[in-house]
Length: 80
Image 1 (spheres, rainbow, N blue to C red):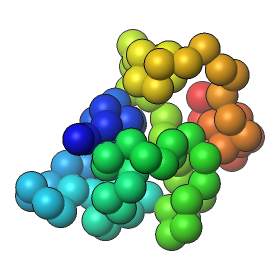
Image 2: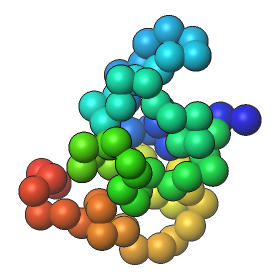
Image 3: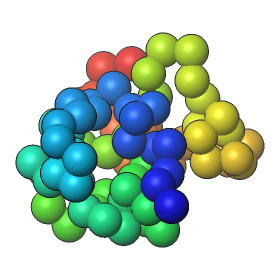
């Protein structure tokens, strides 16, 4: 099962089936694609780039929670 977190992220770049990429990964790890890892939090190899919503999408839409953004999303070096 694939998660919507990648396709709802401003960093998503797409690619060929089975080899999808983004600004954080040339090849998005399976655990992120499946949604078993929440990429609002840092993940090994992401170079400091985590999930950020495309305009019109909220974390609640994608992750089904009303939680405040994680520290990764609140970083000051990422433009709002």
